[in-house]
Image (cartoon, rainbow, N blue to C red):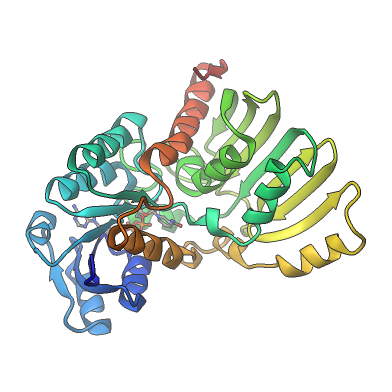
Length: 345
Ligand SMILES: NC(=O)c1ccc[n+]([C@@H]2O[C@H](COP(=O)([O-])OP(=O)(O)OC[C@H]3O[C@@H](n4cnc5c(N)ncnc54)[C@H](O)[C@@H]3O)[C@@H](O)[C@H]2O)c1
């Protein structure tokens, strides 16, 4: 495709990040936005004059200038809208989690294959600067055999945050609480770093919110490699603490908080390497622990999606990759409900 990609966004909560990224992109034109709330549409019209606004998603899909639609509606609606967009001939970039069940998410994968169009999924934390060196240290064997991982998403969300959305903290539309919504990013990173999961054993509870799902989970995760991880997620950790990504191997230990490296100890490493690594990888992604509006990193994934469509290649994260974290999250919930481990195939 030699022209610019025509971009549209449905759902103007975090979807505004997608709008900003598309508007800034040199390879896309922001064509349209869709939401059920007129005021949200008006704000985009003010900021980006000329952008078409729609209250009806299917009406927007009729616009032939649109090549890509970002799906940023409540999680339990992702597959429904993504499949409708694909069937209408549009490529889709779907917010995390891809949907709240494996079955729903598979409908996106099936529509992608059926239509031959592109479907990408947002897990922007994979692009945190510290992820490349961590993955390299694990995959190259520099930290030896990985035997343990410790992952924690100790965030804070007010009751107002849940009340505002209406859908948040409901099994029907959020598919869970702190784990499915906030920590699914880190579940994705965990399985990316540690490999395929063999079993999970979990507990969950509601400690500080009036919601029907959970605001705390704790899990023991076993991997096919033989390694083990502990995983804690919560939205009760006042005032919003950390996103721990800690990996331990027989020859080294690495600890990060979001995109900030906090420990880098590798047997036989050149002198000064740890100091240099800690200086170089010192980011700010932990801000989202306190404030949901401070989620960043969407621009790189929107740009990747635009490039995937224009250059006819796969987007960075395909549905089958994004489904892995949804499968793990649902296994945690099942184990917590039944009190038994959930064993993976
Ligand atoms: N990647 C990230 O860091 C990140 C951050 C926040 C949210 N999210 C994800 O983005 C999605 C939306 O979350 P949010 O916090 O922005 O929610 P939100 O409630 O703030 O926004 C959702 C918007 O979708 C609109 N909407 C609902 N149904 C619609 C329909 N049928 N047609 C058009 N518009 C419709 C609502 O009016 C609302 O404005 C969720 O899946 C969430 O998990 C991702």
